[in-house]
Image 1 (cartoon, protein in one colour):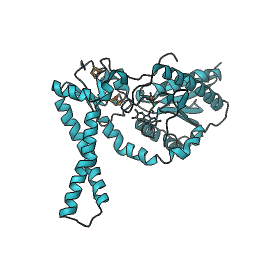
Image 2 (cartoon, protein in one colour):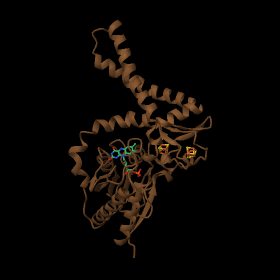
Image 3 (cartoon, protein in one colour):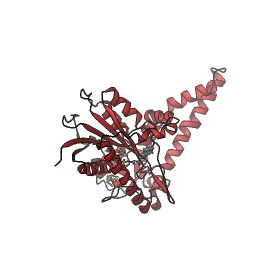
Image 4 (cartoon, helix red, strand yellow):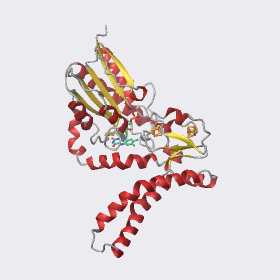
Amino acid sequence: MLKHYISIYYFSGTGNAKRAAEWIELFAKNHHYNTHVINITDIKNIIVAPDSPIIGFCYPTHGFNLAPLMLKFIYNFPRTQKNKRVFLLNTRAGTKLGKVFIPGLSGVALYLPALLLWFKGYKIIGLRPLDLPSNWLSLHPALRKKAVVQIYSRCKNIVEKFTGKILSGKNVYRGLLDLPLDIPVFPIAVLYYFFGRFALAKTFIATSECNLCNVCIDQCPVKAIKLIDNRPFWMYHCESCMHCMNICPQRAIETAHGYTVLLWWLGLSVIPLYFTKILLLHLIPNANFDLIYYLIMALTGLPLVFLGYKILHFLLKYRWFNRLIAITSLTHFKFWGRYKAPKNL
Ligand SMILES: Cc1cc2nc3c(=O)[nH]c(=O)nc-3n(C[C@H](O)[C@H](O)[C@H](O)COP(=O)(O)O)c2cc1C
Ligand code: SF4
Ligand code: SF4
C-alpha cells in the first residue's frame, strides 16, 4: 500500500530532467511513496501539497546555474512552517569519451536554490548532479546513440540509489564534492544570467526549410517564438532550452554560428576598440583604456545583438541570404544531428 507523498517539480528542455523525475517516481513506489510529478510550465499558482513531507526539484543546468525559469519558480515558492524536506537534482552535460564518463559542471545550480529554500524554512536533504547527455547543440554535435544509451543506464542506477537513500531518511550531499570546481565558474554564471542567455536567444533562426507548421511555437515551454513576417522570431525570454531545435519536423531551426561569430566580433571587439581609441585621442586622453573599453562593450553589446537580429530576420526573407546563413551554421550539417531524451530507457 502507498502511504506517503512526494511532490516533484521539474523543468526540462529536451527531456533529461523530466526523465530523472519519472525515475524517482518509479523507484519511490518501491518505498511505498506516491509521487506527484509536476511540470512547472503547466501550473499557474504554486500550491504545496499539505500531504507531501518531501518535495523535489529537477531541472537542467544552464550557464553554470539552474535554468532561469526554475530559479524564478523556486524564488516564488511559498515558505514552509512545517520544516518540509526538499531535494534538488540538476541534470548536467554528461558525455562519454571511450570508456570514460565525463561529467558536466553545476556552478551554482544546486547551491543557489538550496540557499533560497533554506531561507524559506525548508530542510535540504539532497543535492545531486546527474550527468545525462549534453543537449547544448549550439556548442557541439549531438552525442552518438550508443553513448546516449550507456549514459542513460548509468544515470538510472544513480537515481535509484539516490531515491533509496533519500526515502530511507539519509541525506545525500553529493553535489558538494564539486565545490572546488564550482566556485571558480561563479563569474561565468553571473555573466550568463545577465547577458549570455539573452544573446543566445538571438542566435536561433528558421531556414527556408520551415513550412510554418507551428510546432515550435506551440511547444515552446515559455512561448518565446512568434511569427513575424511569416518567419519564426526568437524573443529575449527564450530559455535556450533546445526543445524547439530538436523537435522541428523539418530540421529547419539552426544556431546561426557564422552570423553570431561576426556580430560578437564586431560588438565585443571592433566597435568598442574603435570608440575607445577615439575617446582617448580626442576627449579624455588620460583615462583608463580598459575601463572605457569594457564600458562601451557593455553599452553596445545587447543593443547590437538586438539590432543585428532584427536585420538578420528581415534579410532571411531573401533565399540567397537564408541559404548563406544556413550553410554557415554548424547545426545545418547532417553529422551535427539533433538530441531528444530517448524513450523507454
Ligand atoms: C543553454 C545551455 C546551457 C548549459 N549549461 C550547462 C552548464 O553550465 N553545465 C552543464 O553541466 N551542462 C550545461 N548544459 C547542458 C544541460 O544542462 C544538460 O544537457 C541537461 O541534461 C539538459 O536537460 P533537459 O533535457 O532536461 O533540458 C547546458 C545546456 C544548454 C542548452
Ligand atoms: S517547427 Fe520547424 S517547420 Fe515548424 S514552424 Fe517551427 S521552424 Fe518552422
Ligand atoms: S524558443 Fe526554443 S529554446 Fe527557447 S525556450 Fe522556447 S523551445 Fe526553448
